[in-house]
Length: 310
Image (cartoon, rainbow, N blue to C red; front, side):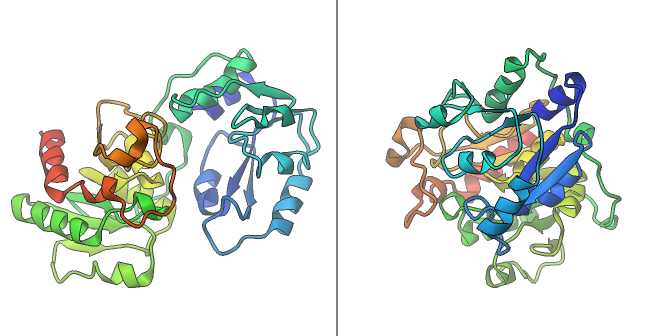
């Protein structure tokens, strides 16, 4: 939505720098003039990472204004490599002095609200948030034979936000036993883990590691409901207007990263635990016992599914 506002009112080119695992999605955004893939070791989850290549990408860019959307210490120095006139970002953790313009960072606001501060600085009106289909070019329907299904996203990029496999499998069994629905499994994970979902059940389609991000979007767009974690696919489902059930950990601050609720289509499930610091989050990327996720039971998700389905 922030880029949409820029596109409408800022008369110039709009360029986006993204990490490798979101590059395919970013290329589909209609609102951009250029998309750069940055193999930044601190942000990329894939194997193709390189400080040298990241330096080369930043060094190749010429622009007037740079918005540093994260403003962390390991991203600000790279922004200095860009041929620019002004570097604007957030005063996060005291690093604001490194910026030409340091905007106030509201630690409790949703990320979309934080990005709107860039528009406010340029005196650009805040745009209405629209369905994802307004912003991106969707591919043709490759999986046209899939009918009447619930899509489930398996896994997420951070271990501490993940859900146990036995919980996923029990949820799948519950939905199959109570509803006349097919199940389509999506996501990226290890092949060993993906093989656990080769269930000998006719109505379960295991597409883990088998789709591109754009193919996954096409599948989600035609789903009855999407069930997932704190991950990109969950945000995509929410912005497509699909009924979305999101299981969230206690890692991030409550209110920061929840999916956008366009038409009352989103339900977020959280469990209050002692180590999430009263909703402020523990920010652990690895947790030996992520009880905030283990305490979310398949029965909890099924109840929400029954509620949102009605």
